[in-house]
Image 1 (tube, rainbow, N blue to C red):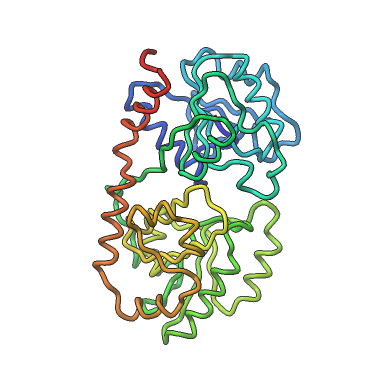
Image 2 (image 1 turned 30 degrees about the vertical axis):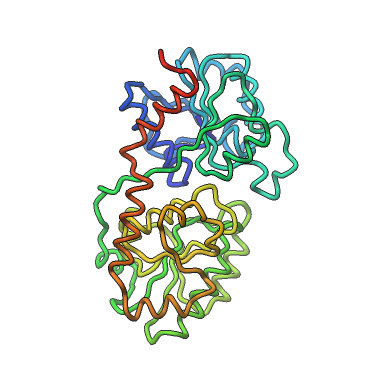
Length: 350
């Protein structure tokens, strides 16, 4: 259950992985959301009042009816980050009255975003609920708030096929010698696009190759005018829009830029490592868990180091990053991690 499912945003992507893992564990899984962005399934239930941009909250009776008598409700960020606060509170109240087994999967929390710092009572402390965070920082803060949680990081399939580098670059008009910097995010404030574009502009002066910048996601959260102004002011040629697949985007790139100021997990860090692409972040400290797992990163403050690497690439560096990502974040471990979390909550029978 979430605000939206079936899309390419991080929550939707991770919810799809959890759906697979729960199916592996013997569950039949269905979806309830304000929006279903893929082709949909016959078992989907769409409640428009749950959508992020809904003007009113959902009807509590409709929410209860949508959940029915299912054995487990997994709430993906809807009761974690109050993007539509009325929906968050209605769902929390319904789940508290309904009883049964509830798992709150927290991708982001209110105190991690300046505009939600004042919100209280989210996430809800539902009796008997299992709280799961995707990083150590959130796990620690929930403990401070008196909520016991377990941590299961976002996980990835290292066996996914590689993308089409030449075909993707050709379709986008990228010359073979161009340096293509990929920022695989939406255009919103916390993704820190100004820092990425500044980095690219400096890098362009340090190499005799043409540097181009590609952001895959659309502007959201009222960032459209700002993004248009940034594009207009940048000396770089900038591309926008998605590739035919995520794998194609990474294959086409020469480096991945991820300068976010706030992140729940940072999927592109692991995805870049698995795709054997060098990664440039805004701050290593923001991604300490990934660094501690063995993933090495450049920073936007070191364009000289990136220019030197591009002039003389070190394949061993990329292979080491890929091996570290597989060791720490393999999707094949997700069913077992979920099983351990269930056991820790005393959920041993269904």
